[in-house]
Length: 437
Image (tube, rainbow, N blue to C red):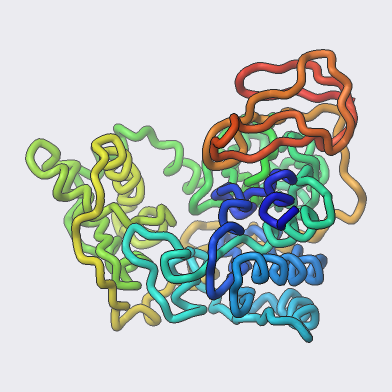
Protein backbone atom coordinates (compact mmCIF):
# COMPACT_ATOMS: atom_id res chain seq x y z
CA UNK A 1 0.00 0.00 0.00
CA UNK A 2 1.46 3.36 -1.01
CA UNK A 3 1.67 6.39 1.29
CA UNK A 4 -1.28 8.19 -0.28
CA UNK A 5 -3.59 5.26 0.43
CA UNK A 6 -2.35 4.91 4.01
CA UNK A 7 -2.97 8.63 4.56
CA UNK A 8 -6.44 8.34 3.00
CA UNK A 9 -7.34 5.43 5.25
CA UNK A 10 -6.06 7.37 8.28
CA UNK A 11 -8.39 10.30 7.49
CA UNK A 12 -5.62 12.92 7.42
CA UNK A 13 -6.60 16.45 6.32
CA UNK A 14 -4.86 19.82 6.36
CA UNK A 15 -4.46 20.66 10.05
CA UNK A 16 -3.88 24.39 9.56
CA UNK A 17 -7.54 25.22 9.02
CA UNK A 18 -8.12 24.47 5.32
CA UNK A 19 -8.88 20.80 5.78
CA UNK A 20 -8.01 19.64 2.25
CA UNK A 21 -7.71 15.81 2.18
CA UNK A 22 -3.96 15.20 2.36
CA UNK A 23 -3.88 12.01 0.30
CA UNK A 24 -4.82 14.00 -2.80
CA UNK A 25 -1.72 16.19 -2.48
CA UNK A 26 0.49 13.11 -2.08
CA UNK A 27 -0.62 11.86 -5.51
CA UNK A 28 0.94 14.92 -7.18
CA UNK A 29 4.43 15.31 -8.60
CA UNK A 30 6.43 18.22 -7.18
CA UNK A 31 9.93 19.62 -6.85
CA UNK A 32 9.61 20.98 -3.32
CA UNK A 33 7.59 20.04 -0.23
CA UNK A 34 7.05 22.84 2.30
CA UNK A 35 5.91 22.50 5.91
CA UNK A 36 4.07 25.63 7.02
CA UNK A 37 5.15 26.40 10.58
CA UNK A 38 4.68 30.18 10.33
CA UNK A 39 1.76 30.28 12.79
CA UNK A 40 0.83 33.92 12.26
CA UNK A 41 -2.38 34.25 14.27
CA UNK A 42 -1.67 36.30 17.42
CA UNK A 43 -1.84 34.34 20.72
CA UNK A 44 -1.79 30.86 19.15
CA UNK A 45 1.17 28.54 19.86
CA UNK A 46 0.23 24.99 18.88
CA UNK A 47 2.48 24.77 15.80
CA UNK A 48 5.54 25.95 17.73
CA UNK A 49 4.90 23.37 20.44
CA UNK A 50 4.39 20.60 17.87
CA UNK A 51 7.78 21.49 16.35
CA UNK A 52 9.40 21.47 19.78
CA UNK A 53 7.80 18.23 20.97
CA UNK A 54 7.47 16.22 17.75
CA UNK A 55 10.35 17.42 15.56
CA UNK A 56 11.41 13.87 14.64
CA UNK A 57 7.88 12.92 13.55
CA UNK A 58 7.58 16.16 11.57
CA UNK A 59 10.81 15.48 9.68
CA UNK A 60 9.82 11.83 9.17
CA UNK A 61 6.51 12.95 7.67
CA UNK A 62 8.37 15.39 5.44
CA UNK A 63 10.74 12.66 4.20
CA UNK A 64 7.80 10.40 3.39
CA UNK A 65 6.02 13.18 1.48
CA UNK A 66 9.18 14.16 -0.42
CA UNK A 67 9.59 10.56 -1.58
CA UNK A 68 5.90 10.20 -2.47
CA UNK A 69 5.80 13.24 -4.77
CA UNK A 70 9.32 12.79 -6.16
CA UNK A 71 10.57 16.12 -4.75
CA UNK A 72 14.19 17.21 -4.48
CA UNK A 73 13.88 18.50 -0.92
CA UNK A 74 11.63 19.36 1.98
CA UNK A 75 11.66 22.80 3.59
CA UNK A 76 10.20 23.69 6.98
CA UNK A 77 9.24 27.36 7.27
CA UNK A 78 9.58 28.60 10.86
CA UNK A 79 9.66 32.11 12.25
CA UNK A 80 13.15 32.93 13.46
CA UNK A 81 11.79 34.13 16.81
CA UNK A 82 10.61 30.59 17.67
CA UNK A 83 14.06 29.72 19.02
CA UNK A 84 13.23 26.41 20.70
CA UNK A 85 11.27 25.14 17.69
CA UNK A 86 14.09 26.13 15.33
CA UNK A 87 16.67 24.31 17.47
CA UNK A 88 14.57 21.13 17.74
CA UNK A 89 13.75 20.96 14.05
CA UNK A 90 17.28 21.76 12.88
CA UNK A 91 18.56 18.91 15.05
CA UNK A 92 15.96 16.53 13.60
CA UNK A 93 16.89 17.55 10.03
CA UNK A 94 20.50 16.41 10.40
CA UNK A 95 21.33 13.78 7.78
CA UNK A 96 18.04 14.21 5.88
CA UNK A 97 16.95 16.00 2.71
CA UNK A 98 14.85 18.38 4.82
CA UNK A 99 16.04 21.84 5.84
CA UNK A 100 14.79 24.83 7.80
CA UNK A 101 13.91 28.18 6.22
CA UNK A 102 13.67 31.06 8.69
CA UNK A 103 10.79 33.50 8.34
CA UNK A 104 10.27 37.03 9.59
CA UNK A 105 7.83 37.80 12.40
CA UNK A 106 5.11 39.41 10.29
CA UNK A 107 1.50 38.69 9.39
CA UNK A 108 0.59 36.73 7.30
CA UNK A 109 3.87 34.89 6.64
CA UNK A 110 1.85 31.67 6.58
CA UNK A 111 -0.23 32.63 3.54
CA UNK A 112 0.62 29.96 0.94
CA UNK A 113 1.36 32.51 -1.78
CA UNK A 114 3.74 34.42 0.50
CA UNK A 115 5.36 31.26 1.91
CA UNK A 116 5.99 29.69 -1.49
CA UNK A 117 7.54 32.92 -2.77
CA UNK A 118 9.65 33.32 0.37
CA UNK A 119 11.02 29.75 0.18
CA UNK A 120 11.34 29.21 -3.59
CA UNK A 121 11.26 32.66 -5.21
CA UNK A 122 8.31 31.48 -7.34
CA UNK A 123 4.97 33.25 -7.60
CA UNK A 124 1.89 31.04 -7.85
CA UNK A 125 -0.18 32.01 -10.93
CA UNK A 126 -3.21 34.18 -10.06
CA UNK A 127 -6.04 31.93 -8.95
CA UNK A 128 -3.69 28.94 -8.84
CA UNK A 129 -2.42 26.61 -6.13
CA UNK A 130 1.16 25.73 -5.09
CA UNK A 131 1.40 22.63 -7.29
CA UNK A 132 1.23 24.99 -10.31
CA UNK A 133 4.86 25.93 -9.50
CA UNK A 134 5.89 22.43 -8.43
CA UNK A 135 5.28 22.85 -4.69
CA UNK A 136 3.22 20.92 -2.13
CA UNK A 137 2.43 22.75 1.13
CA UNK A 138 1.00 21.34 4.37
CA UNK A 139 0.81 22.52 7.95
CA UNK A 140 3.50 21.07 10.27
CA UNK A 141 0.88 19.10 12.22
CA UNK A 142 -0.26 17.48 8.98
CA UNK A 143 3.23 16.05 8.41
CA UNK A 144 3.24 14.63 11.94
CA UNK A 145 -0.07 12.98 11.07
CA UNK A 146 1.40 11.62 7.81
CA UNK A 147 4.14 9.91 9.82
CA UNK A 148 1.48 8.44 12.13
CA UNK A 149 -0.59 7.25 9.15
CA UNK A 150 2.43 5.49 7.65
CA UNK A 151 2.76 3.64 10.96
CA UNK A 152 -0.92 2.64 10.82
CA UNK A 153 -2.34 5.16 13.30
CA UNK A 154 -5.49 7.06 12.20
CA UNK A 155 -6.16 10.72 12.95
CA UNK A 156 -8.22 10.85 16.15
CA UNK A 157 -6.68 13.69 18.18
CA UNK A 158 -5.94 17.38 17.61
CA UNK A 159 -3.44 19.84 19.04
CA UNK A 160 -4.83 23.29 19.79
CA UNK A 161 -4.24 26.42 21.87
CA UNK A 162 -6.76 27.90 24.30
CA UNK A 163 -5.88 31.59 24.73
CA UNK A 164 -7.28 34.99 25.63
CA UNK A 165 -9.60 35.48 28.60
CA UNK A 166 -8.76 32.26 30.43
CA UNK A 167 -6.86 31.92 33.69
CA UNK A 168 -4.00 29.77 32.34
CA UNK A 169 -3.58 29.83 28.54
CA UNK A 170 -2.55 26.37 27.40
CA UNK A 171 -1.85 24.16 24.41
CA UNK A 172 -3.21 20.63 24.54
CA UNK A 173 -3.76 17.44 22.58
CA UNK A 174 -7.40 16.43 22.79
CA UNK A 175 -9.69 13.85 21.19
CA UNK A 176 -11.56 15.16 18.17
CA UNK A 177 -15.16 15.85 19.21
CA UNK A 178 -14.32 17.18 22.68
CA UNK A 179 -16.01 20.52 23.37
CA UNK A 180 -14.36 23.87 23.99
CA UNK A 181 -16.10 23.93 27.37
CA UNK A 182 -14.04 20.91 28.51
CA UNK A 183 -10.83 22.28 26.96
CA UNK A 184 -11.27 25.60 28.78
CA UNK A 185 -11.21 23.67 32.04
CA UNK A 186 -7.65 22.58 31.24
CA UNK A 187 -6.76 26.25 30.69
CA UNK A 188 -7.79 27.24 34.21
CA UNK A 189 -11.35 28.24 33.34
CA UNK A 190 -12.82 31.44 31.96
CA UNK A 191 -11.63 34.89 33.02
CA UNK A 192 -14.75 36.65 31.72
CA UNK A 193 -18.46 36.32 32.49
CA UNK A 194 -19.60 36.90 28.91
CA UNK A 195 -17.20 35.02 26.62
CA UNK A 196 -17.14 35.00 22.84
CA UNK A 197 -14.95 32.39 21.14
CA UNK A 198 -13.00 33.23 18.01
CA UNK A 199 -12.29 29.77 16.62
CA UNK A 200 -9.19 29.66 14.43
CA UNK A 201 -7.68 32.93 15.64
CA UNK A 202 -8.54 36.62 15.84
CA UNK A 203 -7.74 37.50 12.23
CA UNK A 204 -9.35 34.70 10.22
CA UNK A 205 -11.44 32.84 12.79
CA UNK A 206 -15.19 32.53 13.18
CA UNK A 207 -17.11 33.67 16.26
CA UNK A 208 -19.45 31.71 18.50
CA UNK A 209 -20.68 31.95 22.06
CA UNK A 210 -21.51 28.23 22.14
CA UNK A 211 -18.99 26.67 24.51
CA UNK A 212 -20.20 23.23 23.47
CA UNK A 213 -18.82 23.65 19.94
CA UNK A 214 -16.76 20.50 19.19
CA UNK A 215 -13.10 20.32 18.23
CA UNK A 216 -12.61 19.14 14.64
CA UNK A 217 -9.66 18.01 12.53
CA UNK A 218 -9.09 21.60 11.39
CA UNK A 219 -9.28 23.40 14.75
CA UNK A 220 -6.03 25.26 15.39
CA UNK A 221 -7.12 27.00 18.54
CA UNK A 222 -9.52 29.50 20.03
CA UNK A 223 -9.07 33.00 21.40
CA UNK A 224 -11.69 33.89 24.01
CA UNK A 225 -12.50 37.55 24.64
CA UNK A 226 -15.23 39.42 26.54
CA UNK A 227 -18.21 40.37 24.42
CA UNK A 228 -17.38 44.02 25.15
CA UNK A 229 -13.88 43.78 23.62
CA UNK A 230 -13.53 46.06 20.61
CA UNK A 231 -12.49 43.26 18.23
CA UNK A 232 -15.54 41.20 19.24
CA UNK A 233 -17.85 44.18 18.83
CA UNK A 234 -16.53 44.64 15.30
CA UNK A 235 -16.78 40.96 14.40
CA UNK A 236 -20.35 40.70 15.69
CA UNK A 237 -21.60 43.73 13.74
CA UNK A 238 -24.34 42.54 11.33
CA UNK A 239 -23.32 42.28 7.67
CA UNK A 240 -25.92 44.82 6.51
CA UNK A 241 -24.60 47.32 9.03
CA UNK A 242 -21.01 46.67 7.92
CA UNK A 243 -21.98 47.37 4.31
CA UNK A 244 -24.02 50.47 5.20
CA UNK A 245 -21.10 51.95 7.14
CA UNK A 246 -18.73 51.25 4.25
CA UNK A 247 -21.10 52.73 1.70
CA UNK A 248 -21.39 56.00 3.61
CA UNK A 249 -17.85 56.38 5.01
CA UNK A 250 -15.26 54.87 2.63
CA UNK A 251 -13.17 57.74 1.27
CA UNK A 252 -11.06 55.55 -1.05
CA UNK A 253 -7.82 56.23 0.85
CA UNK A 254 -6.29 52.93 -0.44
CA UNK A 255 -4.74 51.94 2.90
CA UNK A 256 -6.54 48.57 2.68
CA UNK A 257 -4.93 47.93 -0.69
CA UNK A 258 -1.50 49.33 0.17
CA UNK A 259 -1.17 46.95 3.14
CA UNK A 260 -2.73 43.93 1.39
CA UNK A 261 -0.12 41.11 1.39
CA UNK A 262 -1.33 39.71 -1.94
CA UNK A 263 -1.23 43.19 -3.54
CA UNK A 264 2.34 43.62 -2.26
CA UNK A 265 3.26 40.28 -3.86
CA UNK A 266 2.08 41.75 -7.16
CA UNK A 267 -1.40 40.27 -7.47
CA UNK A 268 -4.32 42.40 -8.62
CA UNK A 269 -6.12 42.50 -5.27
CA UNK A 270 -7.48 45.94 -4.51
CA UNK A 271 -9.94 46.01 -1.59
CA UNK A 272 -10.56 49.73 -1.96
CA UNK A 273 -11.99 49.06 -5.41
CA UNK A 274 -14.14 46.25 -4.04
CA UNK A 275 -15.54 48.73 -1.51
CA UNK A 276 -16.97 50.63 -4.49
CA UNK A 277 -19.40 47.74 -5.05
CA UNK A 278 -21.22 48.98 -1.97
CA UNK A 279 -22.16 52.15 -3.87
CA UNK A 280 -21.97 51.05 -7.51
CA UNK A 281 -23.51 47.57 -7.40
CA UNK A 282 -26.24 48.62 -9.81
CA UNK A 283 -23.77 49.19 -12.64
CA UNK A 284 -20.28 48.02 -11.75
CA UNK A 285 -20.60 44.91 -9.59
CA UNK A 286 -19.02 42.49 -12.07
CA UNK A 287 -16.08 44.81 -12.71
CA UNK A 288 -15.34 45.80 -9.12
CA UNK A 289 -15.83 42.27 -7.71
CA UNK A 290 -12.90 41.10 -9.84
CA UNK A 291 -10.50 42.93 -7.53
CA UNK A 292 -11.37 40.46 -4.74
CA UNK A 293 -10.61 37.30 -6.72
CA UNK A 294 -7.15 36.71 -5.22
CA UNK A 295 -8.01 37.91 -1.69
CA UNK A 296 -6.83 35.38 0.95
CA UNK A 297 -9.23 36.73 3.63
CA UNK A 298 -6.35 37.42 6.03
CA UNK A 299 -8.33 40.28 7.59
CA UNK A 300 -5.42 42.73 7.66
CA UNK A 301 -7.38 45.36 5.74
CA UNK A 302 -10.33 45.31 8.15
CA UNK A 303 -8.56 44.85 11.48
CA UNK A 304 -5.34 46.78 10.85
CA UNK A 305 -5.14 48.96 7.74
CA UNK A 306 -8.42 50.85 7.50
CA UNK A 307 -8.18 54.16 9.43
CA UNK A 308 -11.97 54.39 9.62
CA UNK A 309 -12.46 50.82 10.86
CA UNK A 310 -14.55 49.78 7.88
CA UNK A 311 -14.92 46.22 6.58
CA UNK A 312 -13.07 45.72 3.28
CA UNK A 313 -12.26 42.05 4.00
CA UNK A 314 -15.95 41.33 4.43
CA UNK A 315 -16.72 43.20 1.21
CA UNK A 316 -14.15 40.98 -0.53
CA UNK A 317 -15.75 37.87 0.96
CA UNK A 318 -19.12 38.97 -0.41
CA UNK A 319 -17.58 39.72 -3.80
CA UNK A 320 -16.02 36.26 -3.99
CA UNK A 321 -19.40 34.73 -3.12
CA UNK A 322 -21.01 36.64 -5.99
CA UNK A 323 -18.26 35.49 -8.35
CA UNK A 324 -18.74 31.85 -7.32
CA UNK A 325 -22.51 32.11 -7.77
CA UNK A 326 -22.05 33.61 -11.24
CA UNK A 327 -19.16 31.22 -12.04
CA UNK A 328 -16.97 34.22 -12.78
CA UNK A 329 -13.23 33.68 -13.19
CA UNK A 330 -10.37 36.14 -12.92
CA UNK A 331 -9.79 37.82 -16.29
CA UNK A 332 -7.12 40.33 -15.29
CA UNK A 333 -3.28 40.33 -15.38
CA UNK A 334 -1.53 36.96 -14.99
CA UNK A 335 2.07 38.15 -14.48
CA UNK A 336 2.47 39.32 -10.85
CA UNK A 337 5.60 41.22 -9.89
CA UNK A 338 6.34 41.99 -6.23
CA UNK A 339 5.81 45.57 -5.09
CA UNK A 340 8.97 47.59 -4.46
CA UNK A 341 7.70 48.43 -0.96
CA UNK A 342 6.74 44.87 0.00
CA UNK A 343 9.34 44.37 2.74
CA UNK A 344 8.74 47.79 4.26
CA UNK A 345 4.98 47.32 4.58
CA UNK A 346 4.93 43.97 6.33
CA UNK A 347 3.06 44.15 9.63
CA UNK A 348 4.94 42.83 12.70
CA UNK A 349 2.91 40.49 14.91
CA UNK A 350 3.56 42.64 17.99
CA UNK A 351 2.28 45.72 16.17
CA UNK A 352 -0.79 43.79 15.06
CA UNK A 353 -1.46 42.57 18.61
CA UNK A 354 -1.23 46.16 19.86
CA UNK A 355 -3.71 47.32 17.20
CA UNK A 356 -6.07 44.51 18.24
CA UNK A 357 -5.80 45.53 21.92
CA UNK A 358 -4.72 42.03 22.97
CA UNK A 359 -1.19 42.67 24.31
CA UNK A 360 -2.46 41.87 27.83
CA UNK A 361 -3.42 38.41 26.55
CA UNK A 362 -0.12 37.82 24.74
CA UNK A 363 1.12 35.11 27.11
CA UNK A 364 2.81 31.71 26.76
CA UNK A 365 0.45 28.75 26.37
CA UNK A 366 2.50 25.77 27.61
CA UNK A 367 1.66 22.19 26.74
CA UNK A 368 -0.65 20.28 29.09
CA UNK A 369 1.47 17.21 29.77
CA UNK A 370 -1.20 14.80 31.04
CA UNK A 371 -3.44 12.75 28.75
CA UNK A 372 -6.75 14.46 28.12
CA UNK A 373 -9.87 12.33 27.72
CA UNK A 374 -13.59 12.93 27.52
CA UNK A 375 -16.71 10.89 28.31
CA UNK A 376 -18.73 12.32 25.41
CA UNK A 377 -17.63 13.34 21.91
CA UNK A 378 -19.59 15.24 19.26
CA UNK A 379 -18.19 14.22 15.87
CA UNK A 380 -19.35 16.31 12.87
CA UNK A 381 -19.58 14.27 9.67
CA UNK A 382 -18.00 17.10 7.69
CA UNK A 383 -14.50 17.94 8.90
CA UNK A 384 -12.68 18.52 5.62
CA UNK A 385 -12.95 20.14 2.23
CA UNK A 386 -15.29 18.20 -0.04
CA UNK A 387 -18.35 16.20 0.93
CA UNK A 388 -19.50 15.13 4.40
CA UNK A 389 -18.98 11.57 5.53
CA UNK A 390 -21.76 9.00 5.48
CA UNK A 391 -22.21 7.44 8.92
CA UNK A 392 -21.06 3.80 9.13
CA UNK A 393 -22.57 3.21 12.58
CA UNK A 394 -26.01 3.34 14.14
CA UNK A 395 -27.29 4.42 17.54
CA UNK A 396 -26.54 1.71 20.07
CA UNK A 397 -23.46 0.34 18.30
CA UNK A 398 -20.35 -0.35 20.35
CA UNK A 399 -17.18 0.93 18.69
CA UNK A 400 -13.49 0.58 19.42
CA UNK A 401 -10.88 3.35 19.41
CA UNK A 402 -9.69 3.99 15.85
CA UNK A 403 -12.67 2.25 14.22
CA UNK A 404 -14.06 3.81 11.03
CA UNK A 405 -17.39 5.44 11.86
CA UNK A 406 -17.86 7.58 8.75
CA UNK A 407 -16.54 7.84 5.23
CA UNK A 408 -17.28 9.84 2.09
CA UNK A 409 -19.27 8.36 -0.77
CA UNK A 410 -17.19 6.35 -3.29
CA UNK A 411 -14.98 8.59 -5.46
CA UNK A 412 -16.10 11.73 -3.58
CA UNK A 413 -13.59 14.21 -2.15
CA UNK A 414 -13.55 13.92 1.63
CA UNK A 415 -11.88 12.23 4.59
CA UNK A 416 -12.64 9.10 6.60
CA UNK A 417 -13.73 9.63 10.22
CA UNK A 418 -12.51 7.39 13.06
CA UNK A 419 -13.68 6.96 16.64
CA UNK A 420 -11.21 8.69 18.97
CA UNK A 421 -12.18 6.38 21.85
CA UNK A 422 -14.03 3.17 22.60
CA UNK A 423 -17.67 3.69 23.49
CA UNK A 424 -21.30 3.52 22.51
CA UNK A 425 -22.92 5.49 19.70
CA UNK A 426 -25.70 7.48 21.37
CA UNK A 427 -26.98 9.42 18.37
CA UNK A 428 -26.52 9.57 14.61
CA UNK A 429 -28.03 12.13 12.26
CA UNK A 430 -27.06 13.69 8.93
CA UNK A 431 -24.73 16.18 10.66
CA UNK A 432 -22.95 14.35 13.44
CA UNK A 433 -22.29 11.25 15.53
CA UNK A 434 -22.38 11.43 19.33
CA UNK A 435 -20.14 8.89 21.05
CA UNK A 436 -20.11 8.17 24.79
CA UNK A 437 -17.87 6.04 26.98
